[in-house]
Image 1 (cartoon, one colour):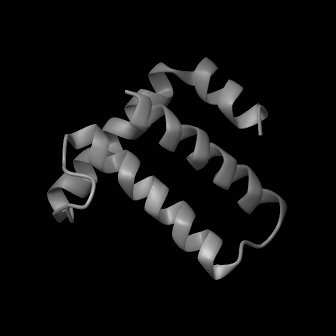
Image 2 (cartoon, one colour):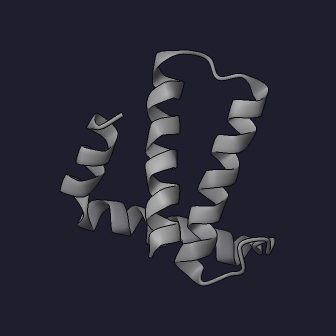
Length: 81
């Protein structure tokens, strides 16, 4: 759970940064890597495992469902940045 929490904090920080200015290429790569790690955690994959198309879709859906179910927490994390 701690890994997920750390990745979520970073992900929402990245989202906030991306909305306020253009990210550098290394920043975009780091933010994308964080997002991919979150999806891996949602489907129980190893953190260095490449997801199949089906796993990727499932991970996205699980993450979006989690965001909807935890809207207040997501808002807090977004505003905290």
